[in-house]
Length: 137
Length: 137
Image 1 (cartoon, rainbow over the protein chains, first blue to last red):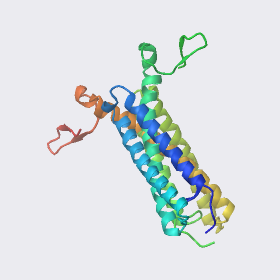
Image 2 (cartoon, rainbow over the protein chains, first blue to last red):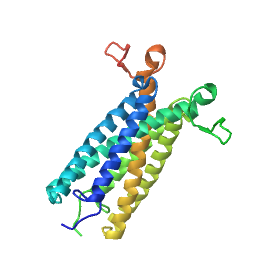
Image 3 (cartoon, rainbow over the protein chains, first blue to last red):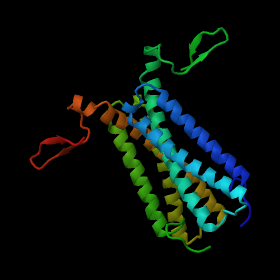
Image 4 (spheres, one colour):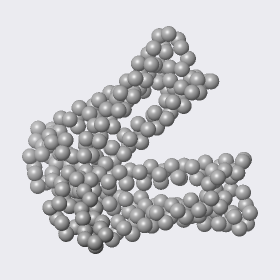
């Protein structure tokens, strides 16, 4: 089997896996820093899905490191199809979780205008040059 | 190219396309029958996505009927890859729209207990044998 860029057991693949881990961890940490996230089913689902993604990517990153150090070839059809199925499942779960959380956030921020009625909330704000807040939405 | 079950230009493919059309139309009609659906971005997005799905499936169903009547072979690589890309895009859009709508519905029905506080709403109700309503959630 030809060496594929980003395939299992390659340096580019390892970097992509580490990227997945970092983004999943960032997603979990930002989500858990929000107040009362546990009372929203969508946000809990997003955290669970990102946790699964983190575990999966971390496991495959470790496998990549092992394969790179021992110069093993991971690109046999059985292993690659296993990785494809796992990646497919985590991708679908992540998309579903991200969309449901986005649905809830859009409901609050746009449909209910929570950001305008509660100006103390830090939603969609950015410090401008003078150091004052201004609302983007 | 070998004849594939459910592929373009086959009877099974035509039946699957008609099924897609019917389900998309049912989704749109149920969504638009809800009161004030237009003030929810997720529900509008679901209707838009299902409208696109309906158009796409209807177009391909017409093409299937044409191919079946004229005994044309639609299974050349260019056409099949065009169908695959289109189906992929509509599938992703439908999944995203369904998940964001489900997120909003779960937020109202479970997290906010709208069904318990507003017993006049017809959510999750089913007529029992005696004709009385009972709440499922």
